[in-house]
Image (cartoon, rainbow, N blue to C red; front, side, top):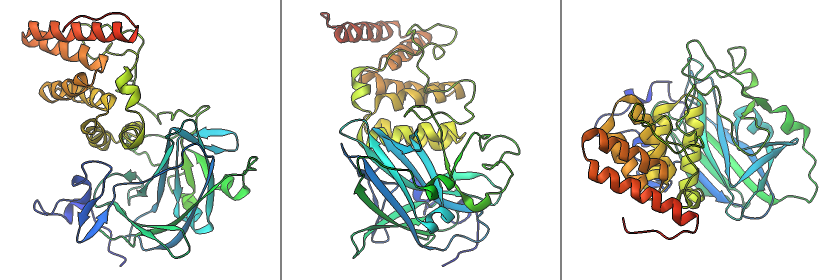
Length: 368
């Protein structure tokens, strides 16, 4: 079951695409008679929860330098020694010892998600690509077993098998020393930087868990580029010279309402991938979230595509988000339409944006 290491694209033909290209949402796909999930998601609602993870077995591809589970929390945070983290990566040696973390909700719709992560032969951390996926099994002892295939080589769900257990946290929880030892800060270069590796010394010493540190529950971008497509400047004005540069503004009510559940999980995980320098994977996640109705995902995806020069695709995604009442997407779409000479439709979108702002302020709106 320990398959030789090889690039995933060398194992798949055009008629047999990798698992990552088959996912269309957070819902599972049927593959060889089994339900395969792109990520495991569980709601923990109002209750502060202890999440325990234990390695049950592992058979990683030969040549892989590390593998583990990426944990993210939506609508809450991971409480670790006074730090509030939206995401950590827990590597195999930490899983072998057994790891317990505290999940604290900030609203009624708090969920946590898990997905495989790995370090390839060159030392680059990967996720959300190739033949990755999860099979979910209920075990006799009441736990859940996640059979995980990493993205390198053909699908093999024995690559990493992790047992999960959840319990309500005590009112006062003392952080465990064993957990602290498995967490390190990930203030590191992105995978796309020449010569960069996801560990300070170039080797995953012990494959310790890594975390994105932040003073608050907001995940901080890791070595983010000068411009992040998820930034939202206060000024909603746009310019003819750069219809993207100042498209920011406060998210609409529709966008805020979409930031829960699977759509929000897909969007936030895309933001994390972008922060790691994995732009293509971020775009795939944002496309899934936008198709599921997340306005901000379509806007951010349109920004990336615009900067790549793909104006047709950018227009399509901005139009999708504009229909979902995203003000930034309406502004970007209007600018593109003006450039193309469709001034009447551009005026219509600007009018809709003005009406949307008026509606949020409680003022009367007119017809579009």
